[in-house]
Amino acid sequence: MADGQRVAVDRGPGLGAETKVVAHQKIAFAVMAIAFVLAPAVIYPLFLMKALCFALFACAFNLLIGFGGLLSFGHAMFFGTGGYLAAHAAKVWGFPPEFAILLGTAAAALLGVLAGLLAIRRQGIYFAMITLALAQMIYFFYLQAPFTHGEDGIQAVPRGTLLGVLDLHNIYAMYYTVLAVFLAGFLLIYRVIHSPFGQVLKAIRENEPRALSLGYRTTHYKFLAFLLSAALAGLAGSTKAIVFQLASLTDVHWSMSGEVVLMTLLGGLGTVFGPVVGAFVIIAMESYLSELGQWVTIAQGIIFVICVLAFRRGIIGELGHWLKKPL
Amino acid sequence: MTEIFGVPTQALFGQLLIGLINGSFYAMLSLGLAVIFGLLNIINFTHGAQYMMGAFCAWFLLNKLGVGYWWSLALAPVAVGAFGMLVERTMLKQLYKLDHLYGLLLTFGLALILQGLFRQEFGTSGQPYAMPSQLSGGSNLGFMFLPNYRAWVIVASLVTCLATWFVIEKTKLGAYLRAATENPTLVQAFGINVPRMITLTYGFGVALAGLAGVMAAPIYQVNPLMGADLIIVVFAVVVIGGMGSIFGAIVTGFGLGVIEGLTKVFYPEASNTVIFIVMAIVLIIKPAGLFGTQK
Image (tube, rainbow over all chains, first blue to last red; front, top):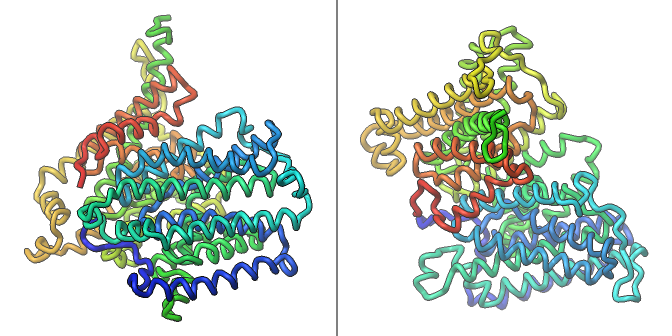
C-alpha cells in the first residue's frame, strides 16, 4: 500500500490549525453532551442506551480505522467478550455492576493483546481477513463454552447497585450511568486523537514507511491503538450486557463486526462525531423497521454499497466538508 | 474391526473423505479469490454469496425448468459469472483507484444484499437437491465405502484447479494475465485490452465459486447462508497459504480440509476452530503465509 492509495478520510488541517479545530469540536461536543442529557425527556431511554453503547463501540472501532488506517473485521469479538464476562461476573459471581463492567473491559483488553500481536503482523486486507477469522474462532469458542449457555445466552443478568448507592433498576439511573460511560470513553478517544500519540498514528496511516524512517516504532503504535480500541469495544459490550441484562451470541457474530463497520462508514470514517451519528441511524433503523425482517439486512447492504460508491465521507464527513471544519 | 491410534479405520477414512470434500471446496473458492485478488487487488467478500447463487441456480434449473445436473454444471457458472461481470462493470470498476479496503466493504455489502434477498425468498431452511442418477450409489474399497458422487467431487475439483493452474502458469493467455498483475499500464501499452481482461478475470473467479456451488448442492442442502460462514474459513485458508501462488491456494485448500477432517476424529471439540488455530500458528512462524511473499 505504498502507492498513495489511502482510505479517503477527512485529513483535517495541518498542525498549525490544531487549536482552532479543537475549539469548534469542543462546541460540538458540548452540544452533543447537552442533547444526550436532555434526550430521555423526549426519546425512549432504552433505545438511547442501546444507541449509546453502539456509539461507543463504533467510536472505538473508528479509532483503529479512522486514525490508524487498520480495518478490523472482527471487532465483535471484543464487544461480545466484554458482554459475556460482565454478565457472568454480575450473575454468577455476584459482582457489583462497576466491577463487572471493569472485568469485561479487562477481558476484552487481554483478548486485544493476543489478537493484536497476531493481526498487526499483516496490513491492509490481510489485517481485515485475520481479524475476521480470529473473531470467528472466538465465536465458536463461546458457542461451545458451557458458561455462555450457547444459543440461550446469559439471561437475567442483575443490574445491581452502582457503587453501593445507585439502584440501576431505575431506568434514569441506568441511563445516566450509560451516558457517563459513553462520555468518558468518547473523551478518552478524543484526547488520544489529539495527543502526540494520535498524531503519530495519523502519520502511520498516511505513510507507514516514512513514519518508520523517522524513527517511530510503527508496530508499537499500531498495537497500542489496537489494544485501546479492543478495550473500549469491551467497555461498550460490558455496559450493554448490564443494561439489557443479557449476553448472547449475536454480539460475537461476524454480522455484528460488519454492523460496526457500517455505522462508522455511514457516519464518516476518521471523523470524531461520525460514529455516534452512524450508530444512532443504524440502531434507529433496526429498532423501528424490525418487523420487516430480512429487509433490514438488505437495506444495510444497500447502505454499504451506496456509502462506498458515492458517499465515502459519510454523514459527518460531508457536513464537515460543507462547513469546511472537520468534525 | 481394525483400528489406528484407537480409532476405527472406518471412521478415520470416513472423516478423511469428508475432509477431502471440504478441502475441494476450500481449494476452489480460495483459488477464485486468489485469481481475483491477483489482478483486481480486491478481496471478494461476495464469493460466499456467489457460491450460494451457483447452488440456487442449479436448484432452480432442476426444479423449475427441469434442466439436469450436468447442464447445470455448465450453465450455473456462466450465469453466476455473468452476474459477477455485471457487478465489476457497474461497481467494482469505480474503486480501483481507491484503497483496497473499499473493495472489501463494497463486496461485503453486496453479500448482505444477496443473502438477505435469498433468505427473504427461500427462508433459512435448506432446499434439497437430488443427486444425479449416474453418480448415485458407491463402491466398496475394502477398507471403506466410497459414495460415487463424493469421489466425483474430489476428482472434478482437482481437475478444475489443475486446469486453472495450467492456464495461468503455462499458456499465453495466462502470461498476459500475470503480466497485467505485475504492471497493467505497460501491458495496456502493448495493445492488450486490460479493462476487458479484468472483467473476464473477475467473471472467471466468480464462475469458479458458482461451479463449486453446483457441486456442493447435492452434498449440502441448498441454503441462503451456505456461503456465509464458509467464506470466513476460506479467508483463513487464504491467509495460511498466502495469495502469491495459485498452486499454494490449491495445496492449502485440500490440506486444511484433511486437517479439519482428522481433527473431527481425534478431537471433535476443536474441529470448528482448527483452521483458525493453524492460521494463528502460521502467522507467528511465517507471517506472509506458507506460499506467499511479504510485500
